[in-house]
Image (tube, rainbow over all chains, first blue to last red; front, side):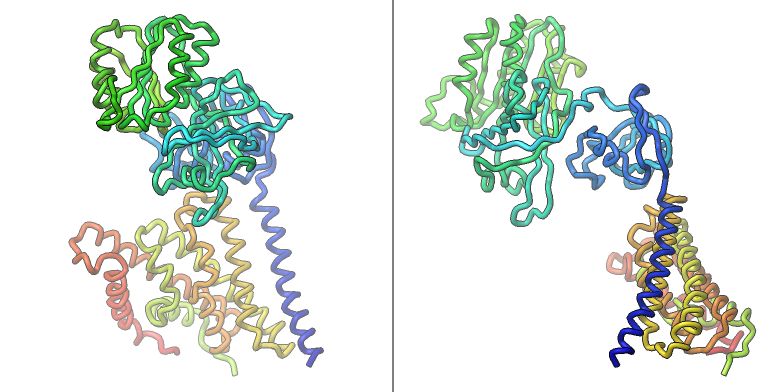
Length: 369
Length: 197
């Protein structure tokens, strides 16, 4: 009996062994794409082992393309231009690319596999993106639904970013969220500060990351993030700077205002901030400080529905009202507009800016906001 | 006792009179799911044909030269499944390398060929019916082509159906099952041609 068991096990193991070795040989043969050369922007070259997706291949080389979905092909952030060696467009990429992008040979790096020598174009600032582990040293309520969190980098690490850029915070699994979920947040701290970053995070009902930050995250915990990313930043120019933000859209504006202070930029700056009631307003002291430090800065908060006991003497109504009125009083031909807030607010304000002579090439905003 | 039918009779019988899908209703799962487009249906059909042909040959060798002489034929299910799984894995590597488009279109149904019951069915029929090696291989190839024929016909019909007004409750799998039934009835018309079990 025992002999029979041993015998059958050996036979079965033998058959499996033969098949397994067959597969190993086949894998060597089929799945070995050998060494592939990746050329980035025509000047940076390196050799990689083929077979994985472009996104993960670049990640191994510490080049991080933005990716909010983690390579599942649903967010479309990892678009990049592949000029050579891409292979056919895959059906999984098609829904996320526009016609122009397809014509210009844009591909999703998370879907495309590196199987031959490949040439890609990515914006230079992406080379600066790194992965960080940082400690949460401060969690502060800014309003009843917006928290400021401070992430301190380890002593050996530094972050270099341009004011206005964002990072992707990696939500750790909790309750129903089973895997790490990266979510993008603008950096609110000054770009001169290289040891820590501040984020402003507003609680969104059912929001994966915002719920985690508001209900689970504690000071002293270590979290991961990648960044900096995005091309929202202060642009050169001589004209007036108009800022429009709402809620946690305050974050990149604070960082940009700090640049204006530090670099002693003497352009006129007017910042329109939209809120519902007085309890949605925050950073008022900081704004008063910027008004003292920047010679030509005006902060214009507007409440859409002030409570009777708010005793509000400022602007009332949606932010578009003071913005529209102000635009009519200035020379808008060289003015630049910077916006961060809800898509609805950005759209409404862009319409008003357009109608008052600020064309889209002088309007800057973050697409994820 | 050896079955002394001509292998070619078995081959054509497997395609028409004893169609693995329309007569035995084996391999329905991927048949219903991947029959929306002719292109992917043909891709999967060819993949199934390939796996069927190779596995009937391999399983024949394994059964008559290893399991039978050693007196362990009761292990045939597990051994057959392992052989099938290995072949599917091999095929997957091949398709991923040479046709990424087909690879993505077949998606999960490519690895699922492993548990496509048509494939285990053919290996078991081959043993039950005591086919010779040549008969087995042609039976496997015939069954695969029969399955390909069925899914191709189905995909053709479903592509036409896209432009038709179908009652909402029947859309999708509902109408597909009804069509399968009608196709199976049509295939009964072949049954007089060759008489094998």
